[in-house]
Length: 63
Image (cartoon, rainbow, N blue to C red; front, side, top):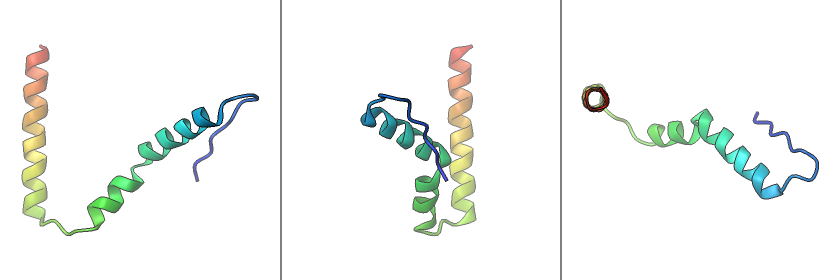
């Protein structure tokens, strides 16, 4: 359960924004979208490898 503390006189829109941020961090929507279709393990492995290569390239550019 997500609990958002709202201070006295705080704008409701700001509280809603806090709630949305917390909800997004939980990853519920991401997990639901992933469960809507089945991906073969080989496809998931390939995507993970591509992501790892991408991250390594980014790290090399920074250094």
